[in-house]
Image 1 (cartoon, helix red, strand yellow):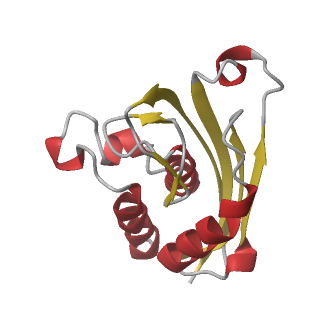
Image 2: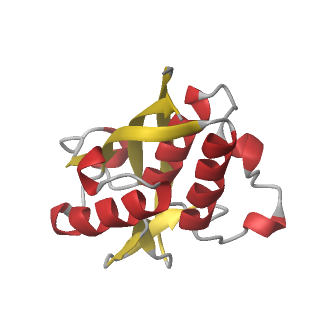
Length: 159
């Protein structure tokens, strides 16, 4: 059995007039994340970690923001495509650990729904998905509520 690990990172600007989608879940907020897709920073970091674990590049390579097919696309669909790439190479997700950094809104009550959504798409147990949330203590662009950041680490094992 072979294991591979990948690290993912994503950042998006917060703006008015957009829905806030995190971990595939819509969260009530005055601001949402700006991007070519729905800008789900958490799912994007997880996808980058999965793709990186297999040396497949990043999500921009597979889902470029120059392709109108991905304009405003639901990132859950992109995650499904990413997990298909993982499976096609003979791997499955063992677990995922992630950190979401934003000042507000507080997301703790939405984490269970995010875990369920992600686990269902990638085919693992909810206990195999970790989502931690923190602030940047009012420092930097996240602290000024200008954006959000997500980090993820994914462990894959061969089938």
